[in-house]
Image (spheres, rainbow, N blue to C red):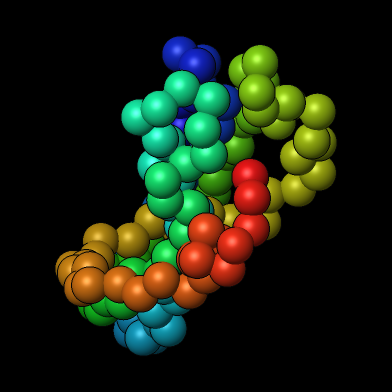
Length: 115
């Protein structure tokens, strides 16, 4: 993951062996904070919502093996201050995934909350 032109997270799985059979996993929908700023200067955002997207995921292949993790920091993400104590294993998967229309979980502006 790169933020502010700094690679802050690098995760690698190597010497991975295929896992068989693949047990089905539960799809956990992503939760996003959607912020659309106002076109007017010094105004609250036009959109401020907590949203979720429905979808499906079918795991085609799964590999498990040794892994490495390195954390760095950017001006807004002091991740390197978190110690990596132990890495038990790593997994890499190949999935067929589709996202459908989502839903608004919380509309902060409709609730009259100010930013």
